[in-house]
Amino acid sequence: MTGTFNIQIDKIKKSRVSEYDINNVPFGKCFSDHMFVAEYADGKWQKAYIKPYGDEPLSYAMSALHYGQAIFEGMKAYKNEQGEVSLFRPLENFKRMNKSAIRMAMPEVPEEIFMGGLMELMKLDAAWVPTSDTGSLYIRPFLISTDEAIGVKISDSYKFIIICCPAGKYYGEPIKVLVETNYFRAVHGGVGFVKAAGNYGRSLYPTKLAQQKGYQQVIWTDSETHQYFEESGTMNVMFVIGDTLLTPALSDTILDGVTRKSVLELARSWNMKVEERKVSIKEVFEAIENNTLKEIFGCGTAATIAHIVGIGHNGKDYALTPVEQRAFSPKVDETLRQIRKGKLKDSFGWMMKVA
Ligand SMILES: Cc1ncc(COP(=O)(O)O)c(C=O)c1O
Image 1 (tube, protein in one colour):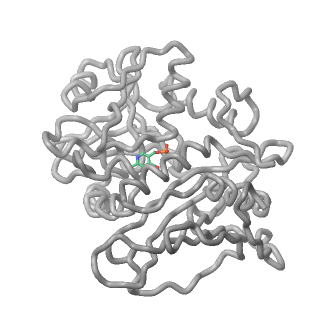
Image 2 (image 1 turned 180 degrees about the vertical axis):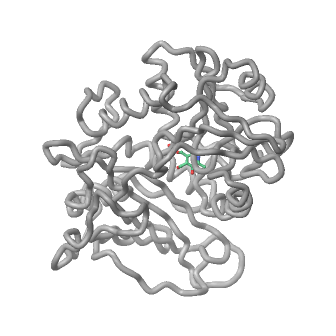
């Protein structure tokens, strides 16, 4: 029992963990022993269970596949030197999941199911949390509509599932990005501020075009004028110009990233000047020209900090300050790593220990 919702547990007979070097597996391809599933039908959450990770029969007529009622979250668990497992700000992901659910006309996942399922799963699969300095267990909660019916309508049935995979560093090297001024990721009134699966599907083609030109990612700009930065790939984007940390203000076209929030809290605690506002392409390229641009970086759960060392715009490439000469983002990266690994006092109360 967790809270008031009973979770049936079917434990795996023999763990697969020894078959992998979990400190060195490719991101997102190796899954832990168990998965959590909760089923929704007839207007309420019906049952919740943990079972060995594996396929479940789903219909090809399933609503999520055709009409996109599909949302997800991404979060991480870390292990300290004593072998204790903690989650980084899981309640933020819980709240964001339900923001997404509301926007996509899906049922909200109760806290006792989201957190209860997560905690039980972490206890069972603790051996899958890497011990390496940069390792973590990536956790993927997702909610899909499961009505077996063709025809656009709000589904009556859903599954909320959590699966996990050990993860190392996401980007091995600093990255080069292209400012995207043709395609866009999100529009006002749309779903850019939530983690709807469709947001990611639509981003793949422009990203492929950028990758064909030698960039790893795009930086999205606003859909109306293409003059303001929004996000970079699946990360929020930040700039250090002079002594100020700048990042686009949240809006309905920008995801409220947990890493973004944490970076801003750290910067403010270090008395750095922080501005959350519209950031224009013009001011950033002027800052590059007059040497006041110190850093551009992306931040998100998968990468934590992705240092951006090259930026392309209007057919021209600009080389940015090498990572070794950057003061702020490497310090943020290291501070977050140490807090997560229990090596630095968690004075913000970000870590939640798995009991
Ligand atoms: C579009 C987008 N922006 C930003 C982020 C960063 O958010 P977080 O720091 O919560 O991972 C993500 C990843 O979840 C994302 O998909």
